[in-house]
Image (tube, rainbow, N blue to C red):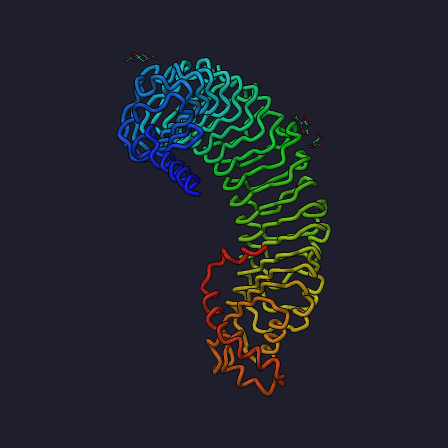
Length: 512
Ligand SMILES: *[C@@H]1O[C@H](CO)[C@@H](O)[C@H](O)[C@H]1NC(C)=O
Ligand SMILES: *[C@@H]1O[C@H](CO)[C@@H](O)[C@H](O)[C@H]1NC(C)=O
Ligand SMILES: *[C@@H]1O[C@H](CO)[C@@H](O)[C@H](O)[C@H]1NC(C)=O
Ligand SMILES: *[C@@H]1O[C@H](CO)[C@@H](O)[C@H](O)[C@H]1NC(C)=O
């Protein structure tokens, strides 16, 4: 017993006071050292150290002598430490170094003579303005290169020609105005050039990127989708550019392209996307579309055309989209929605039509809908025939419309309804509206009811919780003992419903 105790004490001592572990650092058994608030790379680290992590320190300069003898080092991470320069050849002899991360510092140059063992190099958030051909010389094992948020202004093949194994290249947030090709990176899968200053990408740029799958060019000044995009592409992001037209003919070789993001451009029409047969996601939000895209690909599952100038939705627009699950048409000026326009979309579960000019709930919506958002239209009433088939509907948002009365039958036909938003409507708080309230409560639907606009004496009362109206309507409702009980229990709900009313709309869909 005593012996065991002594052993335990010894063990805990040796762990807590490791004589080899420098101050402000913690060391663990797998030769990994983590340090904070240092002013230099800790001297005298054991030569067996494999991983050294330093952050939030002040180490202006790194030098060769900082790493003498540390030949086992595989990962060196120094971030947010104000480092401005690295002595020539500092990392040269670290022949086991696989990961070098120096992000969030003040480097103006890529460190010289990096070891050939390197697989990951992260230099994002520095002040590097030029890349030289010699910077990456010999790095034939490098897979990941991150240079986001630096000051690089151009990119040419000679800078990256050694990187034959590179899989991921991140150059977002630089000042890149020009790129030249062909970039010969046969294994590159991910490339991101978001938020640069590109006006044009030469057709030769992509010709030797035969493995590229994910490409982002969002946030530039491009007026055209680049020519000769690699056939291997799965996802193309071109958001926040200056596209006026998209020529799908020039993209039809992209047979595996499944995601295309074109939001925040200046597109006024889209035609011929069916050439991208495998496209499943198409985003066109915040453009200038006045009519729905013609000839969309049949495999589409998500279509976002929110924030455009669409006026009409007709059956012809959606007749081939049988796999569509999510349709965003919110923030347009839709006033005409043909009955049954979406009936061929037999998998549609999410329909966003908020902030349009609809006067009524569209007829013959697909029975598969789980969410229907009609907030901010000019809908005047709810009719049974509009909602009766929506057996899967879980969320219905009718906030900020012009509805004054509820049809009880319309609501009884929605067996799965869990969330109903009715606030912001000019409710006429008759006792029959109160009956609707009882029906909804009995179904267990979470309702945001809003306030009465009429009759005058009930104005401003919250009709889902007002005790005053409840009292006045009591004889009307023929309350059973059971209902009276729920009425008593509903007292705290008064608070919760007034709190909920203040919640932002963004919370509407935080429900599965
Ligand atoms: C460091 O190396 C670069 C080229 O790799 C060279 O131009 C520069 O003169 C060297 N600096 C010193 C101090 O040796
Ligand atoms: C498209 O995807 C299939 C299946 O993943 C693959 O076999 C084919 O090589 C891809 N086509 C191109 C051009 O990359
Ligand atoms: C679509 O994808 C499948 C499998 O990913 C692939 O076999 C086919 O070639 C692709 N292209 C077209 C046009 O269907
Ligand atoms: C409210 O409903 C009552 C009863 O149906 C009706 O007489 C009254 O005119 C309605 N008030 C308004 C403002 O619509």
